[in-house]
Image 1 (cartoon, rainbow, N blue to C red):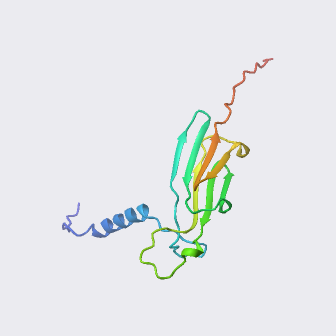
Image 2 (image 1 turned 60 degrees about the vertical axis):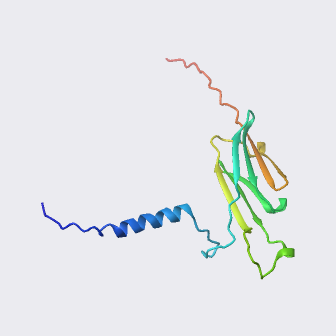
Image 3 (image 1 turned 90 degrees about the horizontal axis):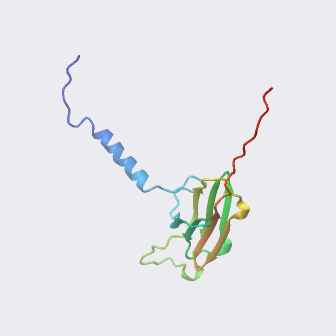
Length: 149
């Protein structure tokens, strides 16, 4: 066994990598189709809860037009996407402060059971999209008797 000298600064690079990973995971950066960082990317907040009829997803989409929202189900994944545009009335270049984010958004949710896309209902009112996902019908098991020869 070789004796090595203790260096207290040896793990600084590893610590820096861990801190960078922590910040990257906590504050993900959005990119557009060209791989450029998009300053207008935003993620709408959602509430997900269960009722007797099924699961409900309520998404806050203030300032988004109903026509700019797309709801899609593919391979048991529900995707809510769309875009919030800048209101031309307020499109000024001399802002003192600008905190309302605009641009494209997308949220995806994995459905736990096979749900018929036709059975999903959605309502959009006062900037809130409410998606109602009914509980799937339970698969009833059948007993089959087999004749053994």
